[in-house]
Length: 295
Image (cartoon, rainbow, N blue to C red):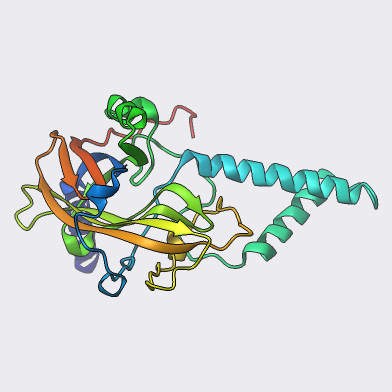
């Protein structure tokens, strides 16, 4: 009896500790726009050397989840169904169950094994409670800012991100993959990563940027040996289109900055080739809705 009471005691304390850890998480809404400076004279204010530019992606990199990922999955399924239907119409008519089984088998054979996850398979996004999920435009505070950038002849909007996340210390922080601007095969004009974290005292949110803006050509530059790192598999997009052309980087502008920020204030990170406007605001996760299904 005493052993069982001790077990209950330790279990209760463990659950209380777990609940305390969850309640101590501080979430923020993060919104930022990254834009180019199209003035060539400004870009040449600094000297950019290939041998001094070391580019790399951090460990633990991830992409933002997007609603378009679900739409893409639906399109792939529809294409598979259409292909399967046209092929089998020449041979024999499959039942719906046989068609689904064949699609499932072909899909598994095509993508291979997937890394283990904590998820339970396909699910819809929860825009109020999920982290690192690209939110809808209706949630944006940057609509006017982005319109101004898009109308400017001196700038181009390359990337706009809007998501929520728990902000933690650097050792627990998760870097986010950034890719924007024009696509050149698997690469983009703008690439790199950024990390949102706390400072040491946890009284300021910090943004760490590791971004690069690349100029490409179909002719390889023999004078400079510019090179781009391979995009980690975790950050690759399934919507990337193959190209028959080969593209070579002929100039890279690297931006590596850190900035402490006050919440609910706009902050601007400057650079000769690009700029970042960012706003972080505290966010309280709403309680999950109570099921009314009766089970």
